[in-house]
Amino acid sequence: MSTQHLRNLSPGADLRTPRPLLSPAAELGRSVRGTPLDRVEPRASRGARAELTGWTSYDPRFASDVLSGLSQPRKSIPPTWLYDQRGSQLFEAITELPEYYATRSEISLLRSCAGAIAARIGPDATVIEIGSGSSRKTPLLLGAVQRPYAYVPVDISGAFLMHSAALLRGRFPDLRIMPVVADFMRPVQLPHALRFAPASGRRLVFFPGSTIGNLEPDEAAACLARLGALCGPNGMIVLGVDENRDEETLLPAYNDAAGVTAAFDLNLLERINRELGGTFDVGAFRHEARYDRERHRIEMHLVSVREQSAEVLGRSFAFAQGETIHTENSYKFDRAAIDSIAKQAKLQRVADWREDRGRFAVHLLAPCA
Ligand SMILES: C[S@@+](CC[C@H](N)C(=O)[O-])C[C@H]1O[C@@H](n2cnc3c(N)ncnc32)[C@H](O)[C@@H]1O
Image 1 (cartoon, protein in one colour):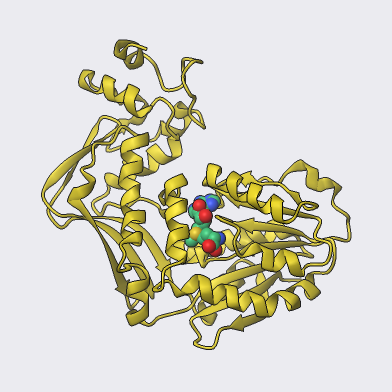
Image 2: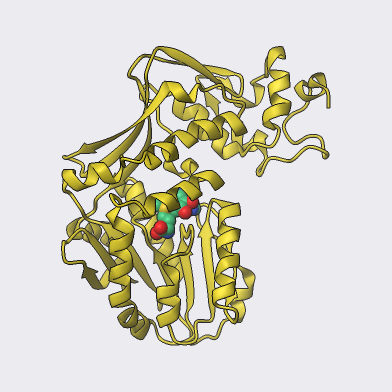
């Protein structure tokens, strides 16, 4: 395809090119700094890049979040976009690190409480996991539930989700495994086949990994309310939450000696370069983890090591030396914070379990009667 041809096309207009996941006109119609995004024209010199990077097939939600996030006085990009295939693989590597206590703590907690959770939810339950990633913790619940009817892992990182589901099929060959690629920041559409689930089987929504901590407290309450709707009046939610507020263990957990968390964070810039025709000099940014004591949250930032500019989809963004892109928050919600968020979501605590050092908790929540 000639570069001239590419310049005259709106993304996805040619059936021979990969199509965007959503309608770019609808999704990108919102303006950034007053310029309607669907009028952003790649410059002539960028045509060749378009062919190389494939930015005819970008995800318009990713493009919109990146362009609007980089246009703010304090640049930020939602943490969801850290998870492409490579990001998911790097996150898995993080969970194995000596500094990253959260996964080990949650697994050991689930080992001790899965039986009690299974007894409360009863037989024939459908387990729906939100932000399922590798589904590494799921066998602990699936193995405890009596005759689980189905397992529905939900994640935005599609290829990684499908791979994880295939691996799990090998381990639970008789279980219906129905992966759903979806954004948990919106209502999730469950597979229609769940209509055939036995009426007696309840829904158990599993939201592990303290992923809820990546949301602002008001977003977390809205997310839990959607999960309450997903599990229905008879269902329950298993929520894994990092409660640690000790800076000495938190900072290394988000800035490990081997540099895996740094690679995970910097992969966002590589992803922008790959998918959105970005021109970031990735080596001119460094990863930094900070702890905000007042808000009880870890922040991840990509710090510009020099004055520079980068282009994304033909738009230029300037960076001063030391300026950052804020890429993730990880709130450390204690019991009281979870109580408040659950109350806003019209959920109540049925039980909770805490590991010895009080760093990680598993909450069992249910919709208020
Ligand atoms: C912190 S990791 C946790 C992974 C795994 N559940 C665990 O406990 O180790 C967050 C997971 O949520 C997924 N995720 C992030 N934002 C999402 C979104 N908006 N919608 C759906 N999945 C999302 C990521 O792809 C990733 O698998």
